Length: 365
Ligand SMILES: NC(=O)c1ccc[n+]([C@@H]2O[C@H](COP(=O)([O-])OP(=O)(O)OC[C@H]3O[C@@H](n4cnc5c(N)ncnc54)[C@H](OP(=O)(O)O)[C@@H]3O)[C@@H](O)[C@H]2O)c1
Image (cartoon, rainbow, N blue to C red; front, side, top):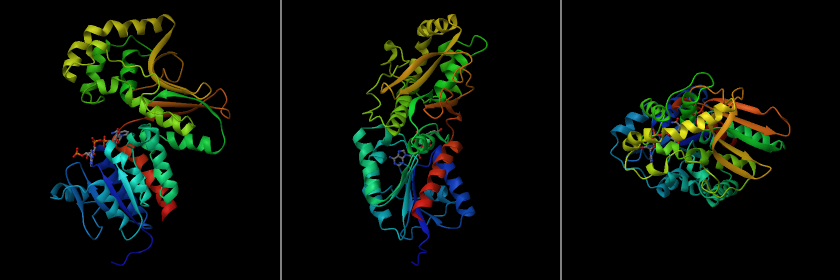
């Protein structure tokens, strides 16, 4: 097969909400930018895969090819071999939330295959995996980008990297990093009006599709802790894991072990008084309560949990399910650099993945 040197092969793992949006953005990108030629060569879900010895799958028809394929996904080492043998450089796009795929990034990167992903698992797992990933990339000259792992498509990671790389001194990072928590607290303790009962707001958030199938997976704070781990490491704190700093869970102790999300929602009204007390304690000071994460670079401390904010504070005034991230730095002084907007959704998350891909292409092709 004659291959133009300015060609890049793309393998996509994961074809859910983000994966589908990414494929449509990839099709538009390939049509807009003929060079380098972007060739989709692999697509998989957890059960099926489409690929061939020509390394060629139509981007527009990839989902149909995947749906009608009878092939099993390649194992991760087999996929690394397949991509390393491609006739030009390859990029792996991981649109899953799989720890197994994340654990294989050092393998792909060491074989010269670049990685772009919205998957938080690799960058918020053990510090050893973090080091292995960046060492493998530096040694092999492959690239790794993960903008959408924090704040979806919002330019959070690129901004932090730019601050650090240009020699600014980050003193503190603070924000609302979860669309679910944002929605819950903006309706439970709004700046104006009294808001609803906590358990009713959790139920509503679940019905609107803002929570995980079991809302405890949002309320335990781990998702926010993972995002804080990523930012802290990029800012220069070698945080060992997302469980190595204080994380406040909003799951009442008594409901931690109930067997299902539905049973949890049924029993939650019995614990409304706890959250009501927190809300009224804030109100007495003219404040509102919010679920935030913060990294204090001076004291080298990271924490996730409830905090009170003046009603005029940008964190208090957040709307809907938006995220807000404030960077306090030496250059920006007492007025932080603030990034705010949708922190979830297939299209905006895929935008971060596609823009990462464009960065990789500019460096490898
Ligand atoms: N959606 C958002 O708003 C958002 C925002 C920021 C970041 N993210 C991140 O983006 C990633 C994708 O999210 P999503 O909402 O698109 O999830 P999703 O709708 O659940 O899709 C996940 C896809 O990955 C596939 N998959 C899972 N494990 C796999 C494995 N081991 N091997 C191959 N394929 C596997 C699933 O296949 P099956 O269908 O066969 O199970 C599915 O196609 C996650 O890491 C998420 O945290 C999402």
